[in-house]
Structure formats: structure tokens, C-alpha cells
Amino acid sequence: MTQKLRDNEVAVATDAPRDAALHFIGRIRTPFTRRDLCPRQGRLDGPDCRLVLDAPWAAGLAGLERYEFADVLYWLHESRRDLVLQSPRSDGAVRGVFSLRSPVRPNPIGLSKVAILRIEGPEVIVRGLDCLDGTPLIDLKPDRCAYTIAAPDKPADRSP
Image (cartoon, rainbow, N blue to C red; front, top):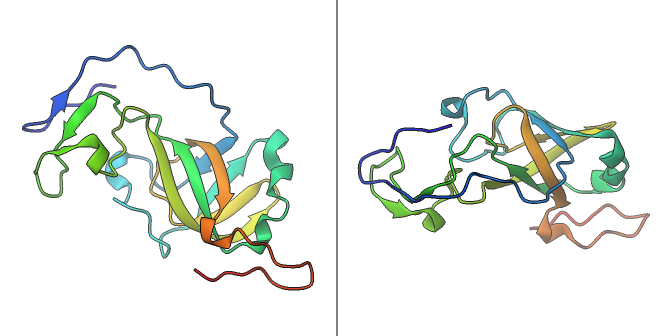
């Protein structure tokens, strides 16, 4: 997918995109069907979204219910990958790709901190995503501030 460059943006010549040897573990279901409908950053008070894990990975959700937040990694499959300088639509200034959280990156991996609302079988219902409906799911990890799991008779520590 080729998109028009904005004023002062710079693209570089790259080989045809070839994805890394990743195993997508599922798909993300969101209400966002076009990039212009996606929020610029996910919001914890945003709409409910679903992380739908493929069957082999559903068992990996065991224990996740003990956490309030998680980090979701996903593959921004519709993003261009050749810009080194970008002009964000919000201000028109030109910046380097690595100084932005833009989805346009050499390796378009997205990362969002989400609130875990509930788990329904192989699906995790969350808030805080900013990606397109159908986005490939790479990984899901309990929030890094919640690594310490509580003893079985105590609730998990949810402190920041």
C-alpha cells in the first residue's frame, strides 16, 4: 500500500517487506475499521476491544485474570515501512521515525498498555487499544509493574 508523502517527509528505498519469523497468536477485534478512525493513542476509557487467541494459545491465558493491566504487542500490518522522516498530521513538523510513536516504522510493531476487563474463553476483553480491527496479535504480557504474583490466598498486587 503506497500512501502519499506529506510536505518534507522522506522515504528510503527498501527491500520488499518480509515479515520476521513471528507466530501471530490471534487477532484483535476493535471498532476501528480505517486508520483515520483509530485514536492517536489508546485510552483506558476507550471502547471495549477483544484479543481473540487462536486455539493453541488459549491455555496460555491461565493466571492472567489476576492482573488488572497488560502490555499488548501487535503487528501494524497496513503501515508503510519506508519513512525515516515523518510529518505528523497534528502539527506538520518533521521528525525522525524513532522520535515518534507513529505506526509508520521499519518494523511496524505496536505496543499498548491495556486494562483487562475480563476473560471469556480464548478472548480477553480490554480497553486501551489504538489499532485496526483484524490486527495480528503478537504477544500479551502482564503489566511490567505487576510481575509479582500474589500468594494463592491473596489478591494480586495491582500497585503502579
